[in-house]
Image (cartoon, rainbow, N blue to C red; front, side):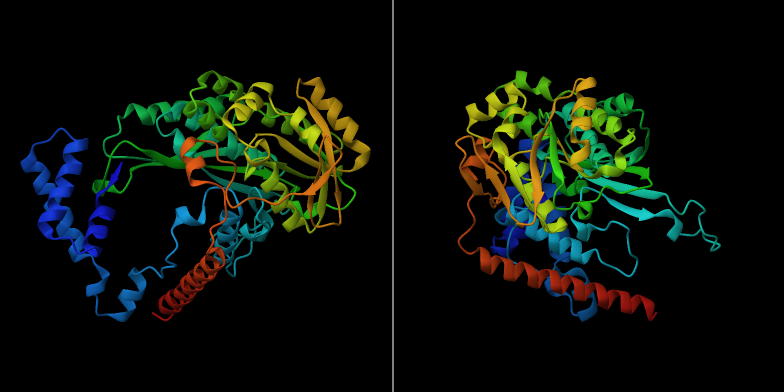
Length: 462
């Protein structure tokens, strides 16, 4: 895929001449599209002209300039590891959560860094001011982005992103009632990609009896981006009367974990390492069935929280959960490894991927010790393996006990486990200038918050 607008702006910054830029754009067009050189030149000139005219450096009006310009951090998304499910990503998402704070309060807000968010229906009224009657009903919502490396495999991409969105509703105790689709395709993508993506999404809809209710289909960047990439996400909505939030966890809780065979990340690892046959191990809805079994039981009041093993693997998830619950955990590593699908674990060993730092699609259950055996037996009855892997304590640390009886405090790395060759080249190490990066990123977030206040004041005063 080629971002022609981004390329043009970058070349303008480098002070390339108009002729040089037009020639480069022409070549990009000719690489992707079956058009004449003359047509490619006409399109290239149009892009060049739009980029020059939209350059904010020429704006004299300070208000408009502030509105349109980005308060830059001078740190790229890639260098910071955003989306890579490690410390760099967690840091940015905490700032995003802070930017989400407004006078309208949620029951479970992004600042909780939980799997999903929620509002209490009884706190809202219709346009005439009449309160909704079901005051004890919680509306739970989730937005899940697709796995970027599965663009060329749209069916499995749609399958896994939809399953993941529903998964995050289930772990909060919510019954899913709606699936919504947002998909963007590059200008040159075959339209069959859209249909294959929707087929994957509707497979989960069919298996779970959750309807697809709305969506949006657009091109990436309109006419300014060429190529055949597919990006987007799935939103899902559910309802419940009790939220199984991370803040409910208390010292003494048992930690149970179900078997895991992974989702989009394991699929990506398998495909891009040439181990395609492992993909079928991920084709199941065991996680969702496990949640339904537990949420329909008579002991749900003794389940304090449920989470999925995704963000940065178990190592990253436990760190984030501890942060919100203000607690610590002691984990038996041997028990964890026994719950990883053998074929998946063999794949990870073969490709040199640390299984503690990658999404396993396992369910974590924090519960009263009195019901741990009930949960394990009930899940066994429906063919799902589950074991007790640890205990919640007051240490505020993630501590693992390994097979040799040695224990160690575990911290997330800057990025999740590198599970493709290109990720291994980039590495998992924290950049040497990370502290300075954090300062620059915080400043950019503060500027955006200030900008929001200025625009709100402007609109309210007019």
